Length: 479
Ligand SMILES: NC(=O)C1=CN([C@@H]2O[C@H](COP(=O)(O)OP(=O)(O)OC[C@H]3O[C@@H](n4cnc5c(N)ncnc54)[C@H](O)[C@@H]3O)[C@@H](O)[C@H]2O)C=CC1
Ligand SMILES: O=C(O)[C@H](O)CS(=O)(=O)O
Image 1 (tube, rainbow, N blue to C red):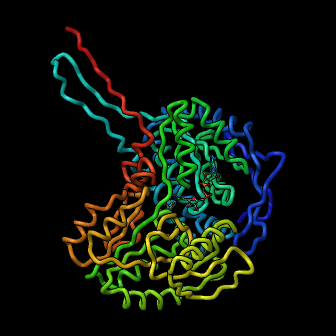
Image 2 (cartoon, rainbow, N blue to C red):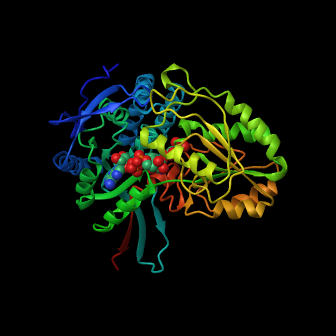
Image 3 (cartoon, helix red, strand yellow):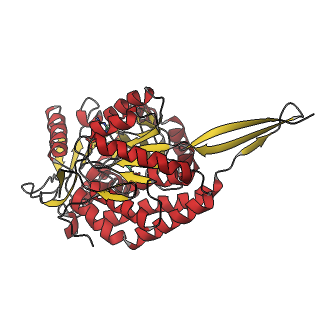
């Protein structure tokens, strides 16, 4: 395993590269250095596009079977290095090691799935209205892809973009989040070990994300931007993309409603809520953000939920905790602000566990009741382990309040009634709806949001379409 506290290289055109200056990657649980990475700038950003463009001319002309074979090898190497990479992920991101290993399995599943999907890039022959013509539709690689990824899923957000891009015949330039670059660097190193050619995957790390992305967004050779992160940054990139009419895929913020209907199985709902709300200490874009419970079952639900939350251990992800730290001090401050705002507006805070918040970016999970929609925690993505609970009288009220937001990523409904399940999933304005299922994410299904939660889908055959141009060939046959 790599010695962690050392200077890590970035990778451009298959070469490992250092820059004059490096910046520290800090462990959010201990505030200790985990490693140092290059603080790249415009020079490295342009070199990455040069390499990706050169590689595209050959990679896009390889057979789908050749690309599939290399993706399979990459999958095998990731699986063999799973524990090593998961450990680095926990050290740099903070999530419990068991969760990091789970993310690695999720991340590698995209490489496996797109190794197979590469061979299914089918076209079409459409009957022409003129007998002497032939109409063919074929799908071809878009070109050089820029991928900018977040810190909350340092592995899965790389492979969920890179695997379909490579399967389609594209090449990529990656900028991982400055908080969690090490996992991404190990994934790219693994790709080179698999024999994926120089220049097909390039990665730069930087403390100046705007400088690097400006180079990529202004370069017409970059044909698409794929981004997962905050909605404000997503909107910024979408505006920049317009200048050279780049394709965009955006996976942005969420404000997931978690609706517990009058007839729900309370035990199942609590188990699902724990799984959704406290995964990654609440730092996922599909976490339950607003909990709506029917007024007739509020008390038994709160009692069961509070008992379950009390069992959660908060601490260092390398020491068996259920919840690790948040990513940084700003994240803790944002969650504390939401707690203070809710209390000032009448919420009851059921503080459920104590945690030594002196060392590291820790914050205890908390349940809020008597919550109203005017509170910040019901209007802004929390990205932390607080669970605001509000009651509703009718299903229509729950639907209306759940939809009353500019976000539309994931929504959850717990009910034992098929009719209610269909009525809710039809009416909820969300790209992902979990019915008695709080963990919908999987490589074979389309993941993505409506409204300001994003554009495009990742996963399934939809995920590869994002990296393909549709070409219509019309043939006039000789007389
Ligand atoms: N949808 C999701 O999965 C995620 C949502 N978020 C939301 O965003 C909030 C803030 O988290 P951040 O890490 O600050 O997200 P962010 O959107 O600032 O960072 C995500 C990525 O964008 C890059 N970035 C930041 N500013 C940029 C710019 N001007 N040009 C190009 N790239 C830029 C970052 O370096 C990182 O790689 C979170 O509290 C959460 O609400 C954050 C991460 C993931
Ligand atoms: O960004 C996120 O929160 C992830 O996309 C959620 S998941 O796909 O890992 O469930």
